[in-house]
Length: 312
Image 1 (cartoon, helix red, strand yellow):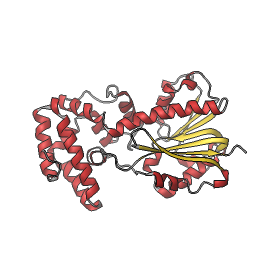
Image 2 (image 1 turned 30 degrees about the vertical axis):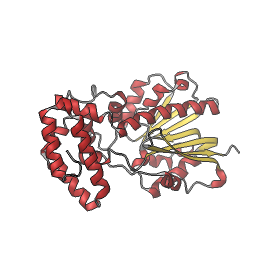
Image 3 (image 1 turned 180 degrees about the vertical axis):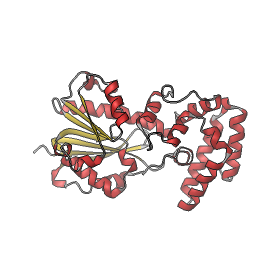
Image 4 (image 1 turned 30 degrees about the horizontal axis):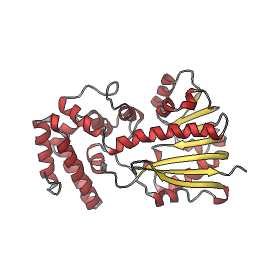
């Protein structure tokens, strides 16, 4: 099937391929993803909204939503996109424990979507966070660490220094009480303090007065506009101790899954390139900075902003 065909033609063809032979769904899903990515880049906002509506009204949508990953993302049972249970599916590459057993075609679609670029980048991000936590312990003895919008903190399972008890204090802030409950269940007896509440607590609460050696946030900035992202970056930087480090992650533009994510997963992100991430740091006083770095993950799907506070 040529991805340049009309959206309806592509949807019809994908539906017929998926229902006729689920075991050979990769070609159909690759074609669908490519066609939607091309449409997303080619169309203006009004045209793209029409395409999304066409996708969701088409009979193929019911087939695609047999995939536990796509259905979970689309339905947003926690009331927001990218919740911690969804990330658990992505981390484990396994829907069990979170979703009902899928149909054969649903399993075939899951086997494709779980290996796509965006989920792969989420797994890479988790590994990098664990490395950065370990590095914080190398820079500072018994560091105090804050994770903003922390989710289930699955990166701690990969952190050598956390398992060795080298972190002096670890605080996880999240608005989702169920996520924080899972942190307590999965890390019993660990030195993790959970703080329920939104990021507004960083602007006016007892937590806002505290200082940390390392502050990071993984998926939060994918949903923040530039103005608020600048304010939050400045606020978190102010909460660093001398010599402390702030790390912010964001998805880059050009993710090949973008059309599929928005049309069938109802998962819309705010993408940032290098220049946009540098603008996020625009409100941080340069005289307090010892270093600023913007870098990509290995697949160039994610971009990271790293800010180091001067030691004195």
